[in-house]
Length: 318
Image 1 (cartoon, rainbow, N blue to C red):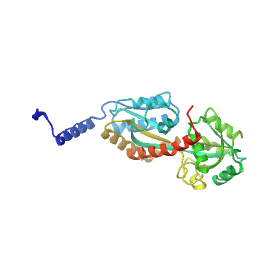
Image 2 (cartoon, rainbow, N blue to C red):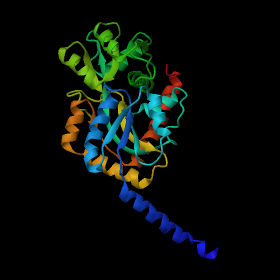
Image 3 (cartoon, rainbow, N blue to C red):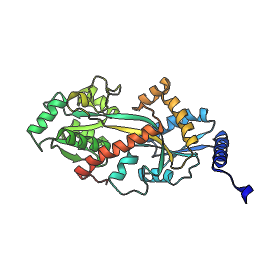
Image 4 (cartoon, rainbow, N blue to C red):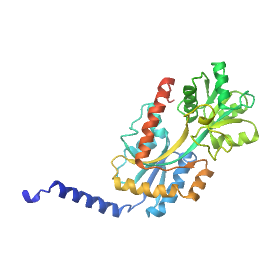
């Protein structure tokens, strides 16, 4: 029996050699990127990144579309942690569990790989609203509590969460008017049914250019090329304000760290490529990248920050 035992040091070396051998053989079959249905931001970003990663990874990367956010995320949470299944998804991954019961844990069930990009929102108002800046909007809302309103789709939508964050940070009472989807919100604002909204920069840009809507600010922490000429909300009346639709790449928990590191390295290299950045920007997404640790820290901070807003406003997903 003594001859069959390994010292702690020998066992550690053996495990390291086994991991190295596995890493040298990875990947040896196609990789799966799971995301939402075709046509949305998640799908487009996933397809661009999957296509770009196929060459350096030396394997085909198959995009698998699933019908809803919960199903998408749960599929990857329950997948084998072998480096052949990844999730590319927006911040709904960690925000939705704050608003409804889900079958996965957004932290314990995933290994963050890298931040992928973000789409800022624009605070837009109807041209008839007598304000020209965020500061003036806040002053008007304070002077007329409960009189102003904003349009948003379902309570868990990015547009509604941005508006609730604004209300919380500015300490104003602005009434939310619900619509079935983001498109009708834009139409309602142009028609004067509502007075303001937060919506993604690409969806608002044509209407700002035509003068049918008035843009006050962009919600990113820095000025955005997706909203040229607009100041940030933070710099024009509400310091510290930041809201955007954020995309990240994740593996199932317990995926070998060497595989996570390899995918991070290749993905970050692509995300920092100027040509790839332009391709994402043309689709309304600003490329971004991070270490796995930075993405994990961001998620923890956002769950704390937005969790308070969600609890205080009593927001539940529908």
